[in-house]
Length: 131
Image (tube, rainbow, N blue to C red):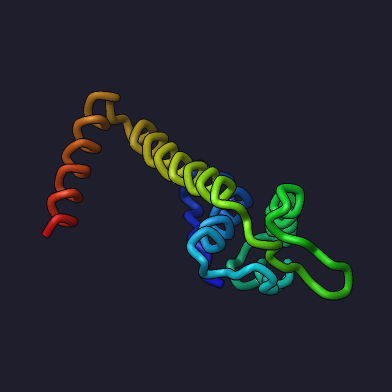
C-alpha cells in the first residue's frame, strides 16, 4: 500500500494517512474486503509512531471505511456509495488546496501573488492536458 505523506505539510500525519487511504479506496486501488497492514507494519513502513497510525485507523473505523476484527486484522469495509466516494474525493481536494495555500502564505506570498500563480499554473496545466 503506497501512501502519499508530506512531513513538511501543516496537515497532521494521521489525517494524511486517512486521506491517502480514502484516495486509494476511491481510486479502486484498495478493494472492499481487502486486508490492510497492521498498525505496527504500517507504522514501520512509513516510519511514524504507532499511535499516529492507530489514530488514523480509529477515525477510519469510526467513519465505517474500515473494520477491525480482533485477532483477524483490519479490512476495507463494503463498497462505499457514490455520494460517499465523491464526498471523500472533495475533502481530499480541499485538503490539498489548503495545504498549498498555507505553505505559500507561510512563505510570505500575498493573496494576489497566490491567485496569479494558481491561475497561471491552471492555464498551463489545461494547455498541456489538451495536447
